[in-house]
Image (cartoon, rainbow, N blue to C red; front, side, top):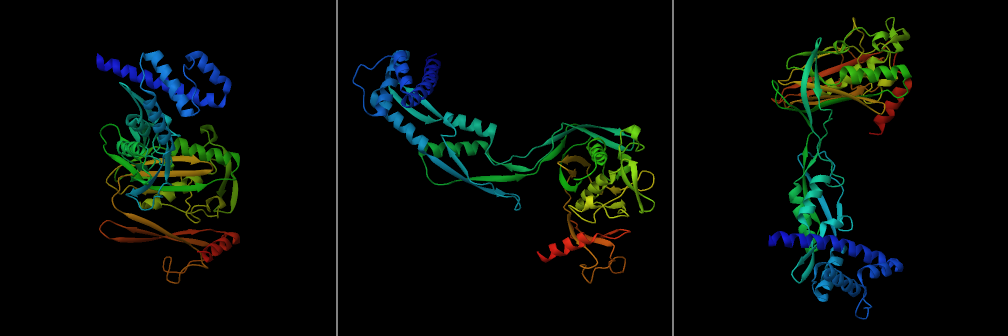
Length: 455
């Protein structure tokens, strides 16, 4: 009972002092408020001191006596206020080190002070002694809740279940998009800060960070485990007509997002569309390529190849075996950004994009738009393969030793080389060829030659 009584007194004292210090701070700047404060809490019995710190101590003593029937000495209160001033003058600098991923940018140094976190300082009233102390628990709670400014923690999502939609397995998720980030020991950081603030250290603090990939975890049987990002594909559709934009966004959000591909199974782009591409099924008219690449005309679903191209780029970056793919017969400017020459055309009933999941775990395909970029991410369990894409190569820039089907690269073609290194050291090299019936715009060739000169 005595302990609870003491705790309540300390809490009331802390609350009171927050108010008192706030009123004193304002009173020094607004004279009428000082008069109001005196009227509310009484007047001095002694001649006022010329030292603002002494005046604060005197007012605090009067109010403590009024509310609690007792108060520490003026000397103790003055010492506590001087201690508070020192606390608020302390400025800490924390630097970071990142373990687990050499390519991650190290966050900028973090500057910490009680000016930013005044509630980290609490008033302690014990017997006839007053003091200000760092509240380590409050520091710990704030770090756990709000984190460290400029340090993004990883974000994880869950796969709640899945359903079979024709030939496609579709996942139901919690809607969280995984994101990689930096982890740290919240309790350890809080203790480090609390100790540094309490001792007034001027030495820089060092906070270790650990890179962690965002993951998608299966929440139920029969599948277990976590999937991390294996590869991404991206394309840009800025400048597309309204109907083309709507088709791209429909394909991304309704047909390509949250597709599960079992181990050893194949993915068919056309199967994800779930039926004919017609206006009655919500597709808009936009330009498509017809007549063996000689004609552009409006067709329902025009622009779908933007999304198949995006999927294809994710497939290539993941090093998955491609079973069916064909480049467009005409060069399409929308596909220049993020990989000129890395495009894949589709047309339900005649041309598909197909690849195999050659890993031992499920793959999860997620798709989204970001501004005018279409993005496809493929999640899975890493098997140790490393993939690199080398290119693009044009007829004028191709190395002398690069042959395509035993011949030199032609003027209307773009080539890339895909390098795959397996965990056992086996190396695989694939030449990716795109051929365009009416050639490549001269501007593209000039831009590429200029870019190579600047490397």
